[in-house]
Length: 306
Image 1 (cartoon, rainbow, N blue to C red):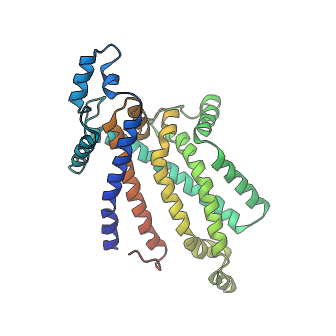
Image 2 (spheres, rainbow, N blue to C red):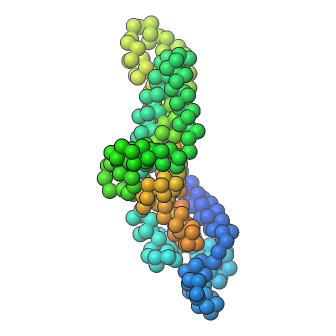
Image 3 (cartoon, one colour):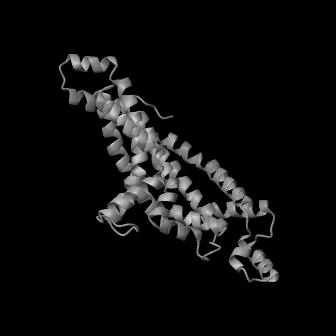
């Protein structure tokens, strides 16, 4: 196990290179000059050139990228072109909000998705199963931003029982977390149903029934535990996707999280901030995947990690 974790940590290094390389050159393709944006519309050409030289934007791209990589491995993610604050400080101020939103959304995804999937698997091809799967299909199909606006209109504007926007209390968390969690719950529900149906046909389930065990014991102790492996994979991927997928929802609900910060930085061509935000979000995703792999061993002792 220790060797496996060490090997996975080593794999983070090429991930860092890949992420920074892709983000760096994509940002170079975005129209607009950061120096012009920061200097303002009325700035002279001399002032713009001076600012470009101060920011190091007049150097060759490979030199800019090489300097950035060396600084990253020393723990220096650069300085924001807009706020003139350290990128790491700015990102770490916003990251906990995005992680908290992703966590509550994932919690909703697990509760709703697994409950619906188990209900469908216990009564396959029944009216209940068909209804749950239709609702799950709708959940996958609905755009998250549209669902967020709909929930906001119903619960904030019409019923006035939940706040419209912000991130100050538990009440502010409900709507954005529910918006993100519903789509993931639909995916988890379908995966749970599929995995459960495959497991309940196994010989050891028939043996458990022949021993006279109660149905609820068979479902939760024997079938569900062995059906969780693909579900855990989906949940882990969903959490990672939520770290980058909160951009629209943070904008809809006016949440000052990492996603909204990256969008604002892209508009300002704040390259260090975009690179730092995407890189740290990617690292969190990598560690979430590592945690998911370790969970495999916890739920199924027969799985060997090597």
